Length: 186
Length: 86
Image (cartoon, rainbow over all chains, first blue to last red; front, top):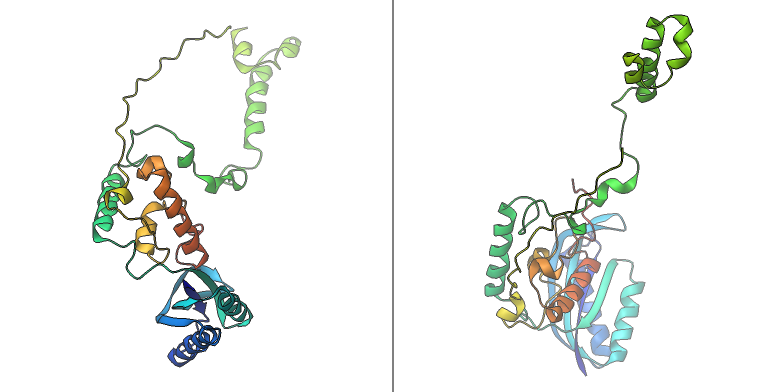
């Protein structure tokens, strides 16, 4: 026997009655394979961090139980087959409250705030570039240059070279197509 | 014109003070993937896991933490990437 826990996400359209019956159903699956249910916690509906099957919300249910590995395979199979279950995960049990401490929350909280206040380069000297600071978001293509008129660059270059050539007598024309500055010195 | 190369002066850096591992300090050896309020503090605003040199977490606890973050991501408690960033 081992202690496991299973967290799964139910379709957002499920009401309280459906969530209760779902928790009940899977508890029975565990008990049917000789396991014992310790806790069935219905978290209720909450926003998902990213859409799953185009759903932005989902209801979470947590089951804590002791069971043999065979019961876990059975449970996982049933969860996978159920199309009202968007996602599920069985892991070894993390006892309630384990790894949670107010002291740790205070420690992490305070440090984060301090860093955030100091501008660029969170917590280290400003101006030091590290690969993690790089903004990868812009790497998807060439920068947007739609603000410039089409072919602006070549047109400028052409006008710069042609103007001094026009001022000059025709005989000097072959010297003109160098750079603009050299043409002016002549 | 030939370019004159000058030797770059190396900026002197003070040896940084080692940051303490917060999990060691509070003697916590389990990180719960369901505790997303804690986990978001070890993830930057793009959703990337913060390196140890930033958070000061020791190698042992970073491994535990990373596993928890990845589990939390799978269960949609934490984002893989924040799409609406920027």
